[in-house]
Image (cartoon, rainbow, N blue to C red):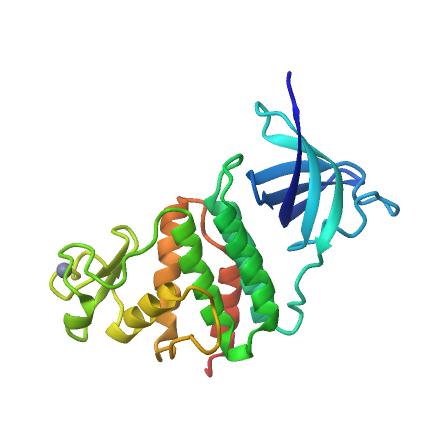
Amino acid sequence: MPRTIVKTRAIVLRTMRMGETSSLVTLYAQECGKLKAMARGARKPKSRFGAALGLMTEIQAVCYVKETRELQTMSECTLLKPAPDLSQSLERLSFGSAACELVDRLTIEGEGNPRLYQCLSGVLHGLAEVEPEQVESLFWYFQLRAAAALGYRPQLSQCITCQRELELAGPSSWFSAALGGGLCAACGPGNGVRLAQPSLRFLAALQGLRTYSKEALPQAPAQRGEIRMALRSFLEYHGGEHSRLKSLDFLDGLNKAALPA
Ligand SMILES: [Zn+2]
């Protein structure tokens, strides 16, 4: 059976213990996309993989790849960038995990997407650097960019059904994950969930940013909960039945616990 040696830059999305000393590592590689590889002996004290296989680290990996097989073999790896320091808050850590989980759920093995790779690398390091009040907006920006990189950019400025400018469509607007964007007051009822006009306008502006920066960031509207739900339902819809993001469930649990009784 022919096998090829692939040398690639990759981000560690997930690791799982295999037996006493090995790890099953899910990587998102810059050129060839998602890759599941067995790292034999990775958990031995003096492993040749060292500390490079931590979650969210960026590595240079060498793998033996057989196209007919789902599980590949990693022969060596070098640490390029350590995992971002998200230990400052559970929120940062949860969004970082959610970004990795999202890429894992929304991609299949063997399909490269360098744009998605760039989005993931950008958000992981951005999460360690932005001000506390911008953490969630940065994650929203990542969700919008990831959707675009995967080919289902939501339509947020015009009604998805009648193409009317949503800006001119009055204060009440709607959003449909299945239809892929915003809806005006005439088309929305029965086809989506309510999403206030300022929230849609904010998302449209965020989607339009070429790079995320504090200065360019539009003012987030008051109803953060509905934005959170709209983006989440949109990506989970596209990911199919197993796309529920556990890291976001965890964060929702924390938000609820923080609410006054
Ligand atoms: Zn309409």
